[in-house]
Amino acid sequence: MTAPERSAPLVSLLQLQRRARQAATPQALGFVAVNETLQLVPYRQAALWTASGLGQVAAVSGPPLPDPQAPYVQWLGQLFRHLMREQPAAGEVQTDTLPETLRTEWQEWLPAHALWLPLAVHDRPPAAGLLLARDTPWSPHELGLLTELAHAYGHALDALQPRRPWREGLLGVLRRARTRRWLAVGVLAVCLCPVRLTALAQAEVVPSDPFMVRAPLDGVIDRFNVRPNQAVQPGTPLFSLDTTALRARMEVARKAVDTAQEEYRQSAQAAVTNDKTRADLVLRRGKVQEKTVELDYTAEQLARVQVKADRAGIAVFPDANDWVGKAVTLGERVLLVADPAKVELVAWMPAADRLPVSPGDTLTLHPQGAPLQSFEAQVMTVAYRAEPTRDGFMAYRIKASFVPGQALPRIGQLGSARVQGGWAPLLYVALRRPLSTARQWLGW
Image 1: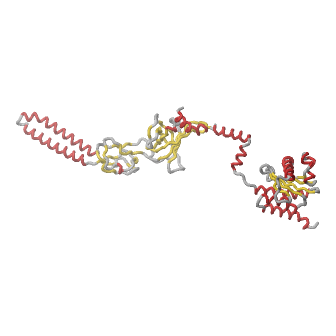
Image 2 (image 1 turned 60 degrees about the vertical axis):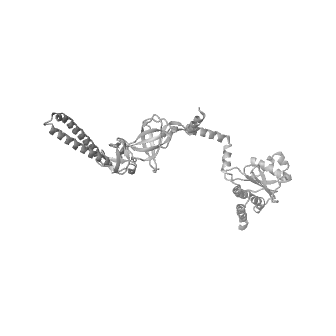
Image 3 (image 1 turned 90 degrees about the horizontal axis):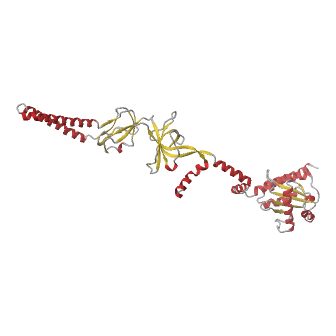
């Protein structure tokens, strides 16, 4: 045998594999499988079976489309179902092992020797099969070539099959009883997994032990000498009150003192010769002392209109324009002088999310505008009752001190505090809020 004759089967195999890859539809691939495989090996009849749906004869050699009602096609369907169950590997069909109904009609429909080629892909069960039949036995060389071709037909047919949506695949997996049991066990384990009870609360960084600067007397604020968050030292002027009314009162008090002193002087001169005037001298002296006290008190008030810082720190107040020109009363708070190194955290835990929090528990502050920063704090006090907040909801006030050894946030920093409670199953944590709402509506 010459070299071209030896290589002819390999060339035919490559051409058929290429034809299989070029097939645009399963019908075109079936036509190639049952008709053009004749280029590789001789045979008399061929049929292609696909297991899609309930299984069907997809193609037979000769006609372009098989008639599903034809007796030959129906008998082939029975034969293919038997081969798919009983003969998963490629090889010649042993007619003596077939069922009686198939064996008695074999000679009527097929030649004596038939080769069965399952079309499998990877390790999955075969989804199709090719049957080739002729009058002479099949050689091992032909079986090797056809097995390689069947592998190419299987890949081509699998590529042409419509892909099932992932939902169908998932439903197919869930239909298995064992999968459902393991899934139920996994869901139960997740539901019983212990997690920490947590709640989010609005929080603000406030000064710890600040010095409260109050109005020294009734009046109107005339000028602010500091800006918000400005550093101050002891004796730094903070603000001053309007002195117009006090200066008028002081001038009136000074005139009253001068008048009382003149009256006392005249009474003292007259008392030398008049006994009655001598008796009024004591009253004149007392009036002078009274007016002097009023003058000293007014002068003292005038000296207090300039308010100065008593300690070092920063001035904490919103805006100077909110106070300039505003009337204040004695003791009214105007601003705070706080130490930036002494801060604490105030959080408002909503009453609907209340957790059993006690002193010593941990809070985590997540400041606004800094997603990569967090600060740890320990609870110091928890209010015994809820109170309305600035946003109008009821909440419990929590005060916490920052854990030493970390950078401190600035005064006035806002954020969310994550309050940690005890441990509870995940199912309870997920259903805690819905159950609380349902209880309020249903009145359990």
